[in-house]
Structure formats: C-alpha cells, structure tokens
Amino acid sequence: MVVQHRRPTRRAAAALATAGIVAGTAGCGGGAAAGDRTADPARVVRQAADRLVREGSSQARTSMEMASGGTRVTVRGTGVYDYRRGLGELKVQLPQDAAGAQEHRPITELLAPGALFMKNRGAGVPADKWVRVETASLTDGNLVTGGATDPLAAAELLRGAHAVTYVGESDIAGVRTRHYKGTVDLLVAAKAASAGNKGAIAAAAKGFGASPVPFDVYLDDEGLIRKVRHRFSFANAQEKKDVAVASTTLLYGFGKPASVRLPRKKDIYAGRVAEK
Image (tube, rainbow, N blue to C red):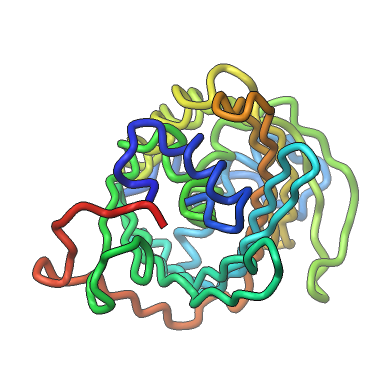
C-alpha cells in the first residue's frame, strides 16, 4: 500500500503495472472570458480554477492511463466536487488483474484540502475503516498516487501555465469549447495555489523535478473547464523504465449539489497498511 512508503509515486506506479492503483482562493479578480477571442490565452487558462470556485460544484469523471514499456492500464473514477469547500468524492475502479479474470471492488476516495481518505484500499484494513494520507507527504502530491487527480488540484496546476496557445474549437459532450494547450511549471503553480493545495503541489514540484508538465484544457464560453488533461512522466528506478501517466478530468453538471462528508476520527484506521 502506497501510504507506508517514502517514495509512493514509484511504488504506486509499479503496483499499477500489475493491475493495482497508481496507488479563500489565490489570484481572484476579474479577467478575460474564455469566449473572448482577443484574450491572452495564458491569462484565460490561469483563471480557470477561480472560475470553478465561483461556480461552486460539479460532477466529474476521471481517467488515469499509465504506460511503462509495453504495459498500459487505465483507472477510472466518477463522482462530485464542491470547489468552495475543496471537498470531493470519487468512486475509483481498478482495472482487472493481468489475466483479466478478477474484478476489483471500487475504491471510495474522499478528497479534502491536504488529505486523501480511501475506503476499501489496503490489505488488513477493516471494511468499515478509512485510510488517511497527507497529500503533502507524497512525492507526487497525490497528482497520480490515488489513481485520480483531484479536480480542483488539476485546475490549480493551470495557475502555472505558460507557453499557452489557442488550438481551436472542440465539442466536449455536446458543449462548444475552446481548446488551449501549453505546459505547467509546477513550482509556479505551487506558489500561486490556494492554501488547501499549496503543500501538495509544492511536493509534486519537488517529486517531478523541473520538467514542465504538458496539458490540454477545454473551456466553455463561461470559462468553465469541461476537460483537462495533464501528462506526467518520471523514472521508475526499480524497473529502470520511464513511466508516462496521462490524467484526464471531465467536468459537467455544474451547480448540482455535491454533498461530501469526511470520516469521523473513530472511523479512520490507525494501524499499519500492508501491501495489496
């Protein structure tokens, strides 16, 4: 289980390769609308997180694809997110085992400022208990470890966007959007992030190093993110291979209630979590 290791990103990547799991708001203010063709693309993209917070909530679908050598696996999730409180809930579905025979029960993940709570994750953890992880303690800031990038964190990464270009219009689930692409400087994103995500993104900036993170984002005419995709890469020292991870988040159903309740202290597992 990833939570017991000092280098969780590498261990999580190795686990996923064998059908496990990649086990107030900053910068507020008025700005250019996504539908304004004369607006500076970088400025539009950097404001995306603030726009989500103003909107309040949405539903979300996530997909995380990992490729290492000839192995490619995908972890998918669905859920809701409350951007004003920084709280989300996802049901994350692991891929089948290598033989394609074993189905895994979905993992319930609760996303909160500075923390990730997981149920049905970790050998030896009672079925009614949650595992809590401090996201700032993970070398990737939980951008990939949990098998889904926190939707608000995915948007906050865009605060470090640079070399942004407008690609053109695209249809995302029947909604007209404007497609932008560029790269993220994680250190810049960490400095500009809200208090709830600053520690986790700063950890990711150290864990991933100075390499920029490529992204594609699709904004509707109101500046809301409809789709965002980040491509992370790191070296897996154990297998001496480069690992590529593509994290995609789709947002829809804006304004619908997103009721998320964090576990009570007595429901959080305090014991050692074994490898699964």
